[in-house]
Length: 383
Ligand SMILES: Cc1ncc(COP(=O)(O)O)c(C=O)c1O
Image (cartoon, rainbow, N blue to C red; front, side, top):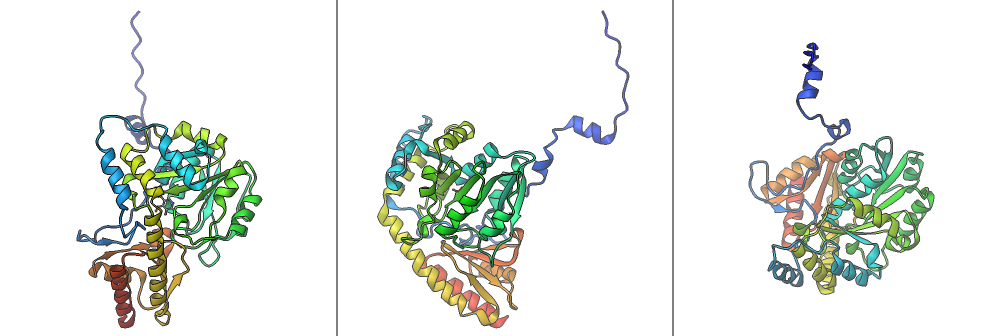
């Protein structure tokens, strides 16, 4: 039987639009894309990059050699279980490899943590001046980002606990924190964890933990041994000098790890990345020399900037491989960033992170930090 012709229906413009093109979710439209650290000035001139907290000494020889050797076979997929990598991490940190997950950078792990445990109607909590990815990870799954006030740029545990509601499902905290460089003590981390309901996943992002001195560890991995609601993440992008390979790892209860494996990308760490990371985590000489270099020149640069306090410059105390410098005098953070471009350096001005007076500068080589200090001093004195 012939079908009756359909009656034409008048369409509103909006309806026509919705039917003629894919319509993104409202919560995706609320995301401002992540802004990576610059490697060039606005005119395209290449700059020395002190804008993304990479290791200025580069990659250790052992990691580089392992990476090159692993490129012999490019036709085969990587080990999907990253077994040797998990075993290497487990041996170094005294952790059960079965409870270790790996990611395409720790970024992937932050995203899958939010995806697994939060969604529309839920809240994801983090500190003001938190790592920029937390906002994206929360919004990507339709959850509501909630920001707790800081205490002079540092994490305020009481403010975080006060911001928890019955809708809170995930709490993100970087320790030490980016972009402030501040550190929350072991006691405070334990107090924060004790104050969170057991159904809230506490994601403790330790991307900069390897820069801490002995005895400064925040106890996160220790807590995660027995707590069912802590997920500790680490990265090979910082002290290990492997940012180009995109490798992160995380440790949590067997239950949490099993859930996260369901949604990580298959084959999410490359063969060369796994090989390089195994060599890097066992290269204690490289780690130690990178840490010592960083501690020495972080202190030196902090003192140099500290001496410019009469020009309105202030360094937020840092436990990381970067400094957050606040500009509250005649020289603005934006002008300082542009002056450093002229000197050949990219740094990170942070208006998008609610810090229009803040410039984040990675601790570079000795020669680099000396130029940075000289340039900032000359600009501050002539402003
Ligand atoms: C606090 C923090 N967490 C996570 C990351 C992500 O690192 P990656 O994805 O390279 O492991 C960064 C990178 O800058 C960071 O600063």
